Length: 295
Image (tube, rainbow, N blue to C red; front, side, top):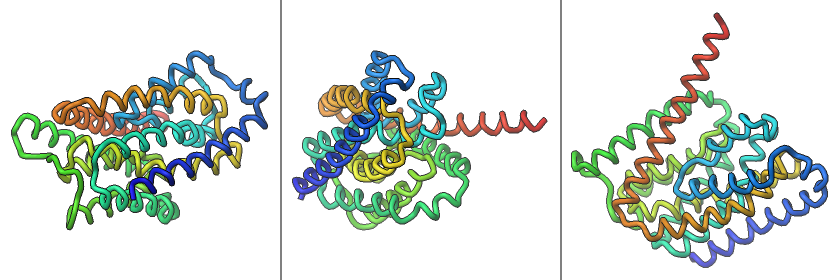
């Protein structure tokens, strides 16, 4: 079954790669004229997806940089964030699923749950204020990281070495990953909440990675192909991220596979804490600037 999953990942992302290549070649003159130094974009792609392989949001990192350096317009930013990560995320998923042991039922059912959430729920998800969702998620992430750290310092028992879930825990994972799939549509990335959920349910931190990336690698290219059809994305950024991001992914994957359980637990705590703090920071300053503008 895992072999079939790997083939499906390859086919879906191969179709995306074909559509991107065709679109880039069709508009290559305009693409090369887009802003951004080639060397800088190559280095940024490698660094961003090196960090993303550990679960750190490439959406958050890239949003800050692209806006600060005016590398793409706000109207093309959502498309660029999706198209630039499709190939690197596919490599992450293939590498983790093929090398890290995880229960097949847990892996496939969690992937399906998130895909269904991404497909069924957009019309409902967009009705909720994105700011409110991010605030609640941010608080939840911070609390989760505190619990992980409390477990590391033996204050409370937390975590485990399971490679899969069953019963009530698996049901909880299905429901939450379904929701996380929907939240992708309001700008809340699914990697950090998936990591926090699966780890908190007692799964070995290493086994979190194939579930986390496997759940993303089907929904991302489907959305990315729609942005390509509409022409609403940065072609040059996507090219360099697709090529050099893969190099960053391969370097990071080799590190993750060699790390012991204790180090992965620290990484999980750091990623979840960073994600929560950055969400709260962003929403706090948005509201502060809004209030100041009304004065």
